[in-house]
Length: 335
Image (cartoon, rainbow, N blue to C red; front, side, top):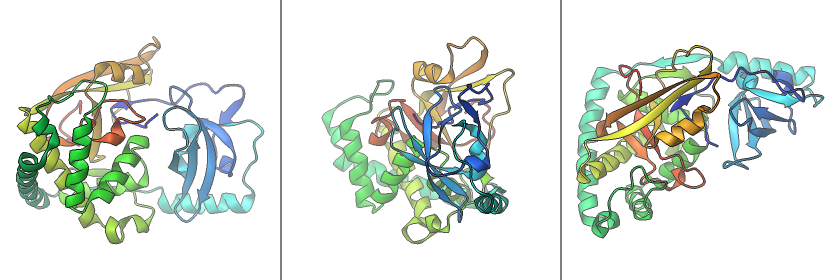
């Protein structure tokens, strides 16, 4: 059960009699509750990190069972907890409040035109590098197979191709960790730093919370290396799509809520969509006649594509959501 942006959901629903709304006092290790999503995903508080204002929340069911999400303290209201569970004592509550005051702040990084021009020039070089590598080394292209777009799974030869390419570019560690964390919970801190790296490059704007963990921007995780991963990754997949005759890909996205549609979140640098309408419908709560649902379909230029399920193994197992990750475009009201 991934946390995705290609649909928007409103969690305000009446609590079950066994649960109560989440508050800071519920952030005690061992407390069990549920996420206010469509499936009411069961969770357990596994860790509480006062220095970063994050709780480690373990997923107890569905595809992502066993994963631990880093959840900001101030987002505890997105959860419900079992009635009668332990409550944090006063001294721990004060630590939580201090962390919220420190980290519950917005940051805006607007795409700078000069940085964008430089990044686009570098991206053009990366497409040439990626295309040259594909011509010489791609086992997928050598096989003569067609792109499995719209199929339930990507292609194993493409999984191998992108891993070999990222390994040769000495970026496989970022590739593997980013893909795994994005498909599990796209709003986690590791992915946030990638979003900020995209914004600093000028490719898209970022509006979101400040970075909480400085270790995620140090050494091999530094912004410049993350930017290198983004550009190399985009160059490769865009070269692949073009060699397969694609100048655009048809994608779907959904908004879903109770009552009138809410304003969409914008400025997150990266946006998710799906190659398959049926998957988007299923995840939207389409069967609930009381929900408001809006479906978008659009042919998106390959120049916006960063990553897809076609070549990314982590987007296929255990998840099967036929996903694509795009650079955000503030002028695009659907995607």
